[in-house]
Image (spheres, rainbow, N blue to C red):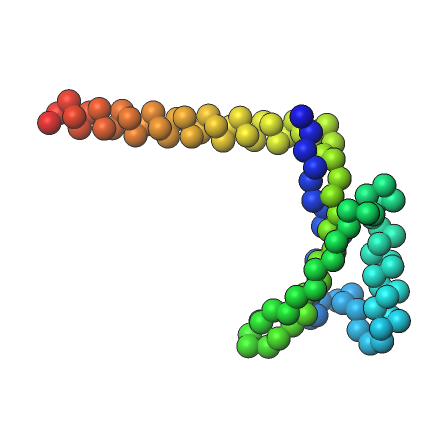
Length: 108
């Protein structure tokens, strides 16, 4: 089953090139440019987060714009493969621990 994934359209701090500066009109134009990069069918899921962060004892603005979309078939396949590998690794670790404990108990 395919899941929805969050796609980051922009993740920018005040010190980065391309950070909107100046007037409110300039900010709105910049935000409109970002919104145009989001596929039309997913624009209603877009959300913006504006935060203040500290870096080297200096307050900085941080802007993130994300939207949600269904994962593509290839992404689903990769996710399922990664989940399977993670499960196999977990099972392997449990077996290793079990065998070590078994040796200790048998040698006790």
